[in-house]
Length: 635
Ligand SMILES: [Zn+2]
Picture 1 (tube, rainbow, N blue to C red):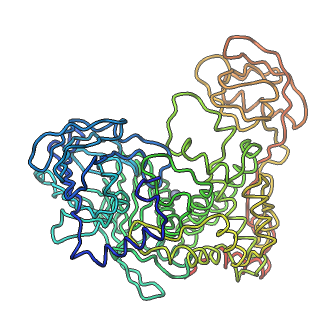
Picture 2 (picture 1 turned 30 degrees about the vertical axis):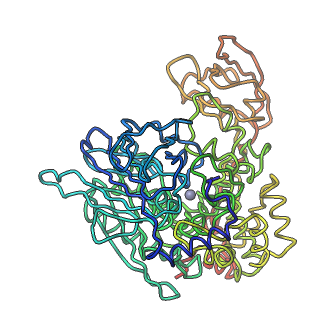
Picture 3 (picture 1 turned 90 degrees about the vertical axis):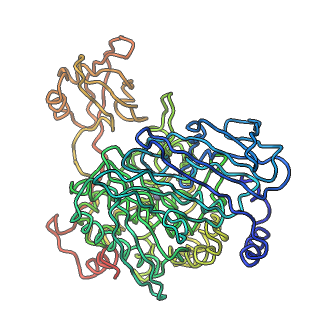
């Protein structure tokens, strides 16, 4: 945990409030950053940070190892070079290096100035990216900070490079607090500073306001750095506004108190960007190599907009105790990401449909894919949704050079949580004739934990625990018995909810998608020019191919006597198989051994969800009403 935050939360809050009230008389020197770009095309930037009015003793200056919303270690210190440390008079100091992330500065005169260069060339929600077009600055990846000064305010001045001929000067998009200087910003404390990414570029700006049920009317800003047209930016802004309005309705018409009065969507849709979306308190980073001009990519980009904006409530303010305060020095472990990420993912689909941006068929296909992934994922035999959440540090943008068994031992908490959100929404609607729903539960969580916890920018003072989740679900319509069963069977247990009767209430049919068709398991097979079909991924536990002894990097040579040297031949062989009927199988193992085995295919277990209408039926008025109250617009 963050060292200065280990005191009881109540005491810290009291100190925080006292500091704010007493600021004019007792203000401590802000930590001052100057960030400049002498040669942006070479992908590095210059940082100078001055820590003034610091207590005697060692000042522990750090680079972060994690970033809020990311759970693996990213070791941002690796990109730092040319570090020079001086005292207030400019005399050099030689810091100790107790570890790779830390510069322990002693012998200072109350001021420590650190200058360094930092390389960054990944445009996403986690890293730093500097090039001739922009600086895309994630603060934990970029700025050193001091352990002893985490409560201090910060002041950041950006020095943009000279504008190039024919191009606009870089401006700054950020949730940092503005000042009179368009390049200087402040943060009230370190937690807020590190949560505040900045995009410096000649971006396209669109703004709109939405008034909530309590009369708040925050300004929404879209800073769009892309290679598209103004018309695409206008259409995107209209759809983002529709998403904002539907998300607002989910939370009972109440926006969070955005501390700066603004919420900023920072979107970098550039060919060299990496796909990501990252939530922050008053902003989000949206990055993709996809483009708004491509309809298939565009809907994906809007899905990420919906996801990240729901996070303004769920995760940023309705926040699990396990993530608050966020630990910048070690991986954070949370068992509640099935709720924080998974329920948010369920709302991506729901909001896109409610906003009229995704068709019913596309929405049902997404729900079916979610159910299939959970129902059929071999990882479900091993771990619960809660346990999957706790693995985030291993799987969330984590890189390992060794092969892992994740396809067989892990189901994403995004997916499993989305399946739980879907089932819980339908179950609450069933129990309460749609008077209660998942929206009601989210509103209860907001009232209990989100709204009261937003007293200090960057800090959630009332994070929730599993007990809190359970009591709010119980109160919001679940009742005690159902809530306990829901958690013990589906969240902490490994059962799958019974979706078919729940979906039937909305006039939807969940059915096998390929009745009678033989199935080998979800095994990737590719043709790479060698003999037969290459098994190009881990073979799922207990699938027909697994039972037959076939493994990753083996090659299938013949199924039931048919050589499978091409996709067409493989399709022909599969078409002749019957579920449950054993056939000979010939394959060659990675090591060269040729095996004559037996394959017993099963019936394709995957489901699909279709409308009753499409099967020739007619939904009853009750089914139509249920469907409309669930999937229709909330405005
Ligand atoms: Zn998320």
